[in-house]
Amino acid sequence: MLGTFHFSCPYHILFFLFIILIKQSKKKTLNNMDSSEVITSTNDENFGCFTRVCNKIRSLFKRLYENMIKFGREAMKLGKDDPRRIYHALKVGLAITVVSLFYYFQPIYDGFGVSAMWAVITVVVVFEYTVGATLGKGFNRMISTLVAGFLGVIAHYVADLSGNTGEPILLALFGFIVAAIFTFMRFFPKLKARYDYGLMIFILTFALVAVSGYRDDEVIKMAQQRLWTVMIGSIIAMLICVFISPVWTGTELNNLIASNIEKLAIFFEGFGSEYLKTTEQKPKQDRSNFRQQYKIALGTKSTEETMANFAKWEPAHGKFKFRHPWKQYLKIGTLVRQCAFRVDALDNYLDYDMQQTQPVIQENFKQICKKLSYELGNVMKEVASSIKKMKKTSAVKSQLTDTKLAVRDLKTLLQDKSLWEKFNLLEVLPVATVASILIEIVNCIENIVEEVHELGCMANFKSMENAIGPVKELSDVIRPHYIVTVDDDEEATNKSNVIPNHKGMISPAEAEIKSIG
Image 1 (cartoon, rainbow, N blue to C red):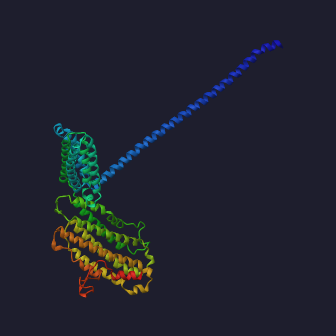
Image 2: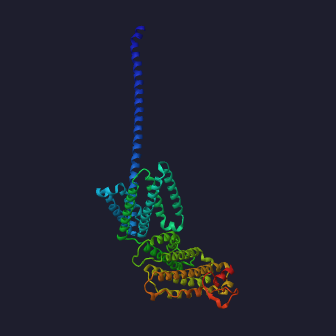
Image 3: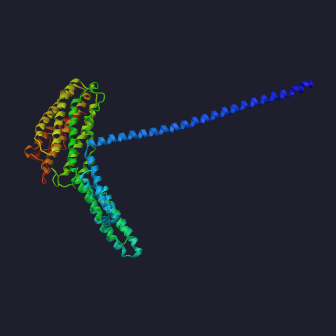
């Protein structure tokens, strides 16, 4: 047995060694599998990150391309809407090119030095879209540079007399006084309207000349170079703006006022067809185009004032003579806005559901209001055409006559007592309020026609034989009321002093509506 045991021992040892080798090989296999899975997952993660980065870069380029296409379409639309914008951009480029020659050519550069760059800067800040704005800025810059440069040189020499110790103190004091005074002057409405840019340039030029003169002894030469370069840049900008495809501010203001009046005319034409419709009869999108256009006239006050100020700088051109009555345009613009505010109140009644109103009342008011709105639209269109063409017209006379008839019919209907007795007050009041607003609008349009007639007389519109008709007839129909004048020696009224007037009083129709309310 021992022999057998000893004989079989090597086999047992080999068997155990074989089992150990198998276990180790399994462990290595498992370890290799785990490491390969880790490597594979790492590779997958790296590939996913790379894919996300590529997608982001691709989306970035896609958005960039879409924005470029959108920008190109918007640029094409702007150019098609008003080609003068393209011409303006080309004119600015031409002015910059011409004035840059002072910096490129050595002989010219030797005369001006680094100050030649001021000519380029002047063109950039002075050149505007319209002639009036460019002339205003150009003259403001030249005059301010001249006066401020002269005072800056004087301030430098006065401060120089006080010695090295007192010179910086005096220069600082002069700078403080000039900056404080001229900054405060910019708050004056009249100065701010026309000379605000000049006052700002005055402060800048005085500070540059006076302060820089403390380190530079050639103050006069520096002031001269700055003055000449500013004048050259301003003159080049003004000449190119005036003689190459000019955009006149006066013409723009004239067209703006006429356009605002046309927008009111469009509303009146649309109001007549839309008013007194029920909810079922109105379209789903009941904010029609005619109900949006007139709102533009409500926010043009600042634009009109700016244009009127710039137009005063322009020379005589076309039908616009020297000293054209630009203030009259502001008066007309103010009256147009007052009318637009009344139109805005009238617009709210288009959203009113007329099912709450009796059909009889609707039928009585519908035809009269429709006729009156139509006539008002014709009057406003004719007035707008008169301003745009700068010609007097006789068509307004006949149109005002038709408006008189419509107003007379509307007043007769409002004064009908049976209307108020048969129906409930809440049913009649909405349509009566609309009628009252229309009467007020007629009075406002009468004032617009009067001011346009005055503009035609002041600006010498053509065709005096076709002058706007006697507007006062309209007020006699709309507001038959009186005022009383009192002599200085008498405190009592005199019947012989009673004269008709159309301002500040209340018509019988309005008085009746208010008394009922």
